[in-house]
Length: 507
Image (cartoon, rainbow, N blue to C red):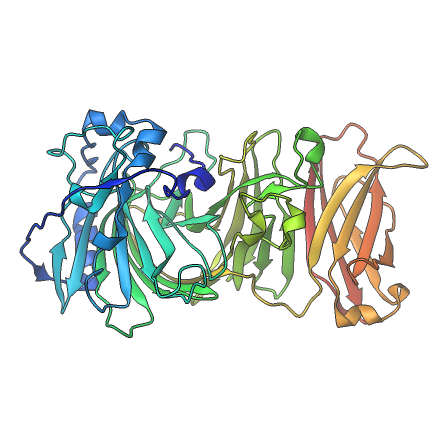
């Protein structure tokens, strides 16, 4: 699947001179709707051989990026724009990277009506936008939700906060965020040698909200060669933006490598690998770490990496309390990027409802040389495959915005470099944030540092006057090793006094 520059893709077209196309109205005949109907459709699909949907016409696919971006949705023609409903829905054009359209339906009073494709909902640039054949453009490529978030930059207007577009991808932001990482309905065979399979949302049903309704409910039907699914998203925007996700999956084939609640993000560099990039910015990433609260109650922080070779890490667990990709750097000076605003990218936390059994939080890190590529994937991989013909029920919560609170000191920075004095080797530097527990003397903490590959120095803990927290420093000599795994944490009076820091050092 093509990777897009989210920063460029979401740029406003306000700099373009746009001309509106006259409106048109098309009618459809409704049919009764319920979540049970979506589940029935998913089950029926799974009982038939997979058949890929038709692509949109060639001239739509032949558009270049500037041409595609020059055709902008007219928010005055959004779904429910002329009503008192609390949400409006914008639609995205098919074509370019989006080869197949999706069917979108509006549900009112239990009756679903298809929202037909209508080119008159869009504005064109008089010089850049191409003339397109309309006979084969049978749907949109996705949708965008907007509601009143009391945005000071857009007083009295509905503000966008959530997008569903491309395969089973979707993304959201909390109030004050800008778009960053994405979620997906399901990941299949991520990182496998035979290649990844990308299930697709092929139809959506949007439950019409009342005038004062706070939440928005979206249903989606998923299809792929290996699995079908019925999804329900109960979305509550704000700070944070919370999504309750229910999914019923039907396995067409044995699912040997399924990724549940998958997250996709970008990590290019920070202080650990800045030397590989000739860039004025101190860091570039949508997310900087994987946070896990495992079934044993441990809080684990694994800084992300942009490796030179594909690497997959598995954090074996049973009934995890949660996991997520987190952005902890929240100052503009952390990135010095006046355009991308990486310090405002959301974190995304997955909270399973019920027991997910045995498996592993899995982290896939893919080499990348530009920030336009999403090279980080995290998901829950069940230990046991799902058998052909099985039905899988999932229930979990996604929270977009700040990371979940913790009683333990957090790791706020990881850095590595060559030793300045003494024998050859390398230093690892870990900064913990300010916390009341650090009012105690540094010598009252127990330092636990381990590695299965080598011996490390004992470690030194000292106060960091800049952060108000503690800094842990230790050294190691990798010699001929190309990668080394580390685990470090602080304890006090026999109890955890920090997160568990996990790190993979690579050449």
